Amino acid sequence: EAQVTQNPRYLITVTGKKLTVTCSQNMNHEYMSWYRQDPGLGLRQIYYSMNVEVTDKGDVPEGYKVSRKEKRNFPLILESPSPNQTSLYFCASSFSGTYNEQFFGPGTRLTVL
Amino acid sequence: QQPVQSPQAVILREGEDAVINCSSSKALYSVHWYRQKHGEAPVFLMILLKGGEQKGHEKISASFNEKKQQSSLYLTASQLSYSGTYFCGTENTGNQFYFGTGTSLTVIP
Image (cartoon, rainbow over all chains, first blue to last red; front, side, top):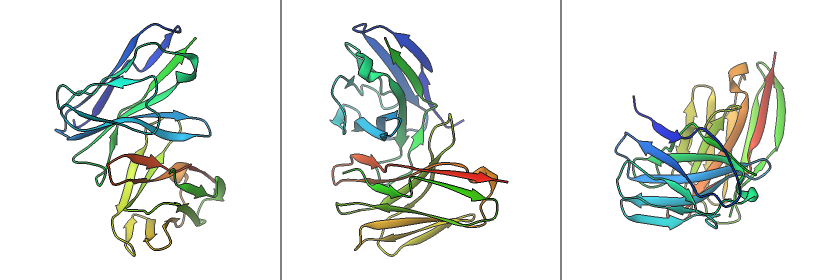
């Protein structure tokens, strides 16, 4: 089944404890992206990647890191999480760039205490 | 650069029609529409790539006015399953993507 998977789905952590949210797609998509969703602010892009080893900042990159070592994986790293990073995170992928349908993962709900 | 949607929220009875508008202060190269049901991930509805383009998806269709930097999503004869939050979206020249502010649509029996 073609899909985007994220893990974990739910995470409660404490300020400063490094964490990684994994994202993987099995559709051989070139473009991958991370979004955060907050009430009243909608979905905002954190980072995106056009292809392996190519990543760029989105609208709200501060406090996040990403890497794209393999085409299928695009992990999101929070080196020192803070409470303002409490949010719902979505990973998405598309065949090539933004002129295509984006397929979303199920989301990761992160709470930073 | 986030597109602005209107209305923010709308409540419909089954069978009624609705229009959701999306406008941008910057040039729109294309317009995407997504629907997100409560507790779920956004799901793609359609993309309009050229000004003047119109597309349909079941009873949901959209138009794109490139000159006015606007797009509208039309929902006709609404069904309960249409409930959710609708987002438009667009990109800049560098493949950065922006979702709109969102419109909450509730269809009641």
